[in-house]
Length: 111
Image (cartoon, rainbow, N blue to C red; front, side):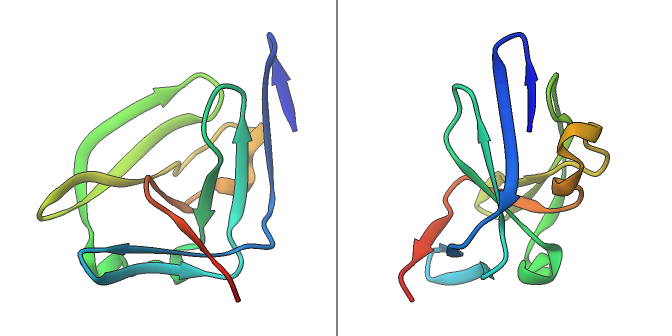
């Protein structure tokens, strides 16, 4: 957990089974995601690279900076730019998310 100027971020192992499907194609599925909760932001699941079909993704030139997490790199599908991101060198307070992938549309699955 890290708190800065009223901004709180927690990262912990999630109990949820999550997956990402786009246009009927399974892009990722994990039973061991990390859940990141951040003040003012939706809950996000960060998936280990082994649980993501990275062969379907193309690296994007997009980069963004978060003062709390660090610099993010993005990947795209042919019809969906910057669909997924990761932090190759996150700030130490959120080091657990290093190289984990986060998608905008992650769904939880009832087992």
